[in-house]
Length: 220
Image (tube, rainbow, N blue to C red; front, side, top):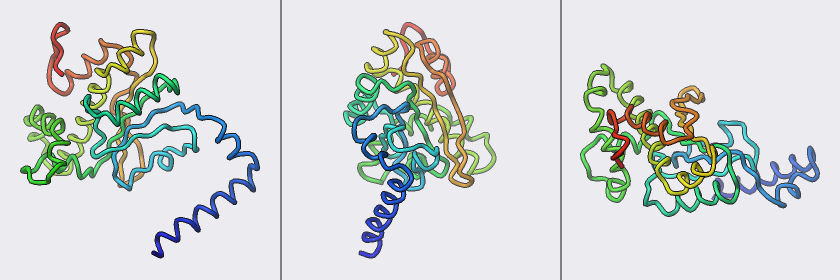
C-alpha cells in the first residue's frame, strides 16, 4: 500500500505546485481540450508520452496497447482515432514504438504466450516478410531494433488504410501521420517516417516493409 499512497502524495504535491505557479491552470484545462497530436504508443511503463516529449496536459490525446499496434479491427483504437480526427481535429497522428519492446520480441519466438499471440500476428508477418534483411544483421540487438522500426512503419501504413484517415484525407491533408521510435537506453526519439498524408506516400511506405505494392490491389 505504500506505493499506492505515494501516488496520492505525489498528486497533491503536483496539483499544489501547479496552482501556485498558475492559479487558473485547471479551470482552463477543464473547459475543453484541443490537442495537437494523437499518440499511439506501447503499454510499456517506461514509455510515458507526455514525459518523454515534454508535453503538457491537453497537448496529446493518447492510446496505448501492446507493441503499438494499429489493427483495423481494434474498435478501441478506431474509436479513439475517430474522436481525435473528427471531433478534436488533431493535426498530427504519431505511432511510437520503442527499442527493447517485449511485444515485438515475443513475435519472434515460438507461440505460447496466450492471447498476446493473436494480438501480435501483424508483427509476426513483418518479421516473416523481412527475414532476409533481419538475418543479415550480425547482432541480436541490431535485429531487434530493426524489427521495432519495421513494425512502426507497418502500423503507420495500417493506420493510413482506416476509414477514418481515408475520409479525412479525402477532405484535405489532415491528419499527417508520422512514425517514431523511443530509445529507452538514452531517452531519445528517432524519426522513422514523417509527413504521410496521401495514398501515394502510403504505398511507397508499404514497399519499404513488404516490397512493391500494386496501386490497383494494395496489400492489406
